[in-house]
Length: 351
Image (cartoon, rainbow, N blue to C red):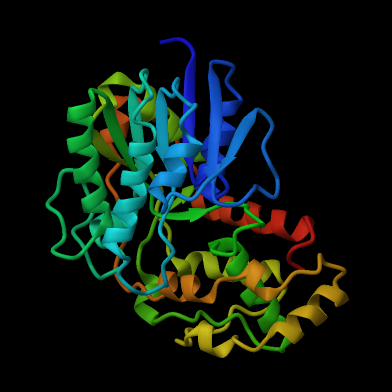
């Protein structure tokens, strides 16, 4: 199959946009992007369709003319709060509606599902490490399990294959996405400095010293493109991270140094509570440093940051499977984090 046509659900989200960018640079691909709202910064060579995946009839009507789809990429999520188990029914319904809507695509060959560390229960508590794709599931309610089981059954009936990617915490430059590790920590640092405070680590001491892994967004996009077009990757899931390990105790002083402030101590606190009323201070920071005039909520998601930095357990994924099948990309997580932080600063989003 030489010419391919991709349909990307969640095309205005961080992952969906990265996959769209990766595929659309290849002349063999025609790319359609689905989103509920029009993209603020549309990518060239991507055809956008606005639809609501929670409405089966609407999305079926909106996609009725797309009969040449060869690859579907599901990069969406149902709306959810932080630090809670996400709803399985609504997440499964979105995927089900999407596959129903492309039921008339006669060339459909593959469907890719973006999962993540939550497949192993990384958000719940300690899990067996290094996490391997074939290990038994955690005994928890988990929409990743429901979606994968549904996809596996649908593929057998439809005659196409599937794959799933499992990154861990993403690091990326996405100014339109406040649910972002780099920009949230950067905003926290800027507020601390403006208040004359040190950059205290807001999680527990065990989290400060635990081992973790991250996934650079562009690496994830390359991995998704690889596994969705490589025949021997069919019908299985894959861990995909930067492959290196780091501790916050190593990275945190580097972040403080970048803002020319002391790293501080471990001081557990809920940033969602402590920094809830700091919009006026953020406005002053933007004016003082001639930054883009943004609301604090556009730059930082305190609930997401709290949920990430509270984990006292190691987060280590095994990479033998992707390596054995031919994907050898890697990244330096600490260096990439600092590079992206500097990108936010140089582009006027952080001081």
